[in-house]
Image (cartoon, rainbow, N blue to C red; front, side, top):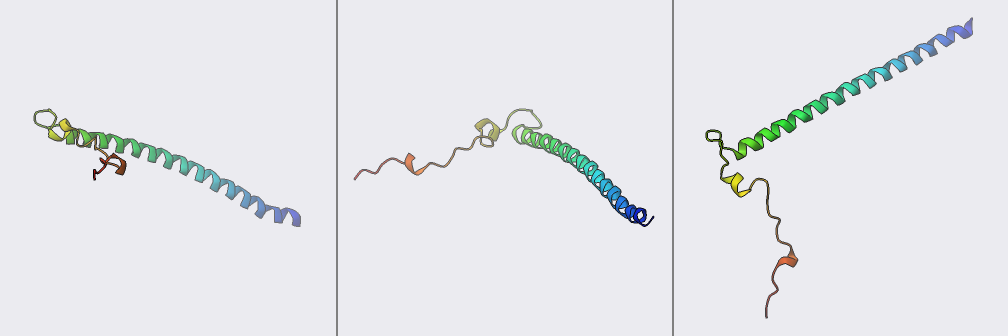
Length: 88
């Protein structure tokens, strides 16, 4: 009888540990889904911001920054090897 009484606390700890693991699994799954949805919303918002930065809201035509490509294409800084050699 004494052996069965000491087994109950162990069994209770085991069941509570399994319950915690299940809770953490469900919580992490819902958090992952929530973060994925937030990422999608951020991508849509970023696309909308880029669109608003390039298009004139009144006319719907491209503005000056979009037509010259200043926002999307920036030329890299020239490397040291790209410089012409000095003549002496």
